[in-house]
View (cartoon, rainbow, N blue to C red):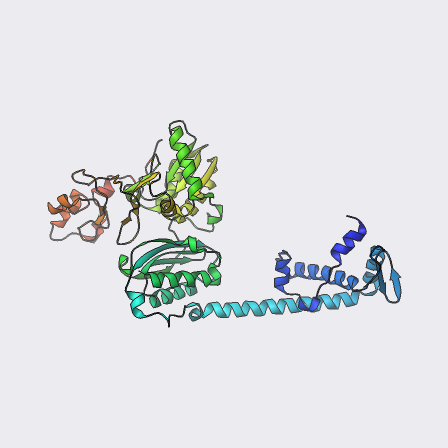
Length: 459
């Protein structure tokens, strides 16, 4: 680029009085300090000042500038003149523009903070909706998450409580500085208004309609509404500041994931350099999973980091295809696995099994999809891959152990339940017949004692 072209590219008209942070943003400049802002504005102010001295000439003539009763035909000479004789004016214009920009920025910040602190401003108008539409009629359950920076989790928590209560929604919502994770149920009218409210909130502007996974259900799928502030929006037990979701693996759309699984199954898993990893809990993968997957026998997602540490050799020099229910556990789980630097690459199913089954109900995932509400599972195909705990007949409908204070889930078919086999194991079945037992024994049964906390797997 010659000097004339360079001058023309730089000497653009700049309205110094109207320079705002948005102008800077549109110019794709990012400033971390006021000093950098000042430097940028000064350059633009200088260019604008010089451009204002340019005079009209014939289209084929060389450009001319006039200032202080002098005429300049060379860009360098006019630049030198302005620098020597008009430095004070440039300084004054720059300072005024910077002050204006900072004051507007502060005013906009105060305005946004004021709006955000007023939770009522983000509650949708329901005057056109009857109470019956919110409490009766066809219902559904929403499953979603959003990793984003939340400055005031308590405020978002209060807003969620007010929003869900007004829309007659029940469920569970976890809020943290790293984002939000929720599953709520209600009428379709209520859930529709909830989605609109979420998408209109500036904190969650990165969300899209398709980020909400929808299944049949209602407010009755949950006992109550629980909204709280936590350290993590999914409890992996690792500080998000140490292992962030930003380190997550490559996201694959359901179509891409389906093709890779198809290739994996076609080639066979014995000599493959790819592992299909289920990062859910054992009782989830027990009733539904992808074919030929590695499903760790762990009870909680907080055990997953220890599982990875204990089984690093499994993943060494492997490509890992990871999946979970809705995608959120893969965000942190893949980040943790990648932090070990043993895998060739780590991929994760975008939207989780839920989104996959919406497109491929008869695909490579067989059985039920476990959900954390009163339904326990939802079905996309008719396959039953699990058995009754007592007789071994095909069965995949969970119920809680009948023993008081035991939180284990049990697969007991109708025939066995009629015979009284309603507990998760013989130990709990015996407890049920006792007149009393200590609450401290609630986790001490055959189910927990016989299962190692962190299994050591082989392929």
